[in-house]
Image 1 (cartoon, rainbow, N blue to C red):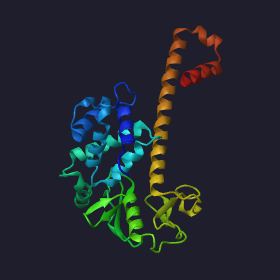
Image 2 (image 1 turned 90 degrees about the vertical axis):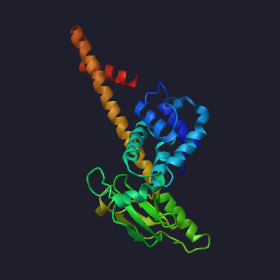
Image 3 (image 1 turned 30 degrees about the vertical axis):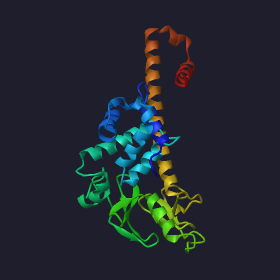
Length: 281
């Protein structure tokens, strides 16, 4: 997936002056490292296409991160998730020794980058006979990458699926039915080669437990990534709600301490109702 104008418009909206999700640090970093302009770029809506092209150029040769950016600036995405993710990617780029974005994946493989938990970021390079390509697993981003022998770089799952479709062509032999499911230890999901010749993924009956058997709902690679982004967004929303509830409860308790007579006329249920109404507001 490539960056579209809609993705940029959503990014600008989230980072605009006065936006509750605005991150000054991200605004400045994007201005200096990607757009090469002043920090007021979020208000310059006439330059959406210019910023789109700049992002596409910045992601050149790094289809994995570009695809994730598109997913995280989609219609149902959560700004906080995108901001946290993009700040990390910008920091990686800024602190790295890569000469150009095109060399990002190839250099990472050679340097033996470490994931957050200290293990080697990438798994050993292996061959997938179905795709006719070498692949590796990126432990940091939780995605598979595929080696493009034409330019010597690592590409996204979406690119690999397109490669398979192009190689097979309309008359090539692709499976008429899906191949039997196997277990993926990295994603803790079942996978199979679907009728179109590309991989599909399904949760276990009890998610994460191989022994419970394979579920019936099969998802594409992009659907799994989008679902993961949505789950992260839900966790952020839950954390925000818990924090707000704690603040409101503390304010109510403070008000009750200032006027003790209120405790005599308000029951615990009344107080809980007040907090609930304030949460809704």
